[in-house]
Length: 102
Image (tube, rainbow, N blue to C red; front, side, top):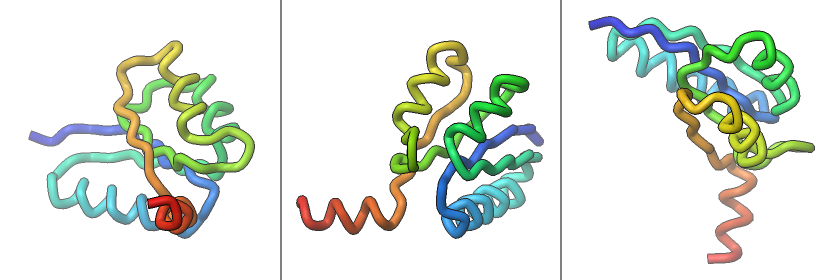
């Protein structure tokens, strides 16, 4: 059964956006789903569009972005839209930082 998903990818690093978009597109093709993938370079850019269209099914949010991070963005989204699945991602720079803590 083909399902349709509207997916947002929000990350301040273009290479991470491209990587996540390729993974989502590959999964979509393999599973036979129809996915509309929208990409955003900042939380603010996402919120600008989100104010006009809240019909996202899945949100892939970078946990560390300039100004507003993925956790803050997820909290704002949850205030008025509980339906979307929110997935927080760790970029390479966060993983490098965490390696020194662990």
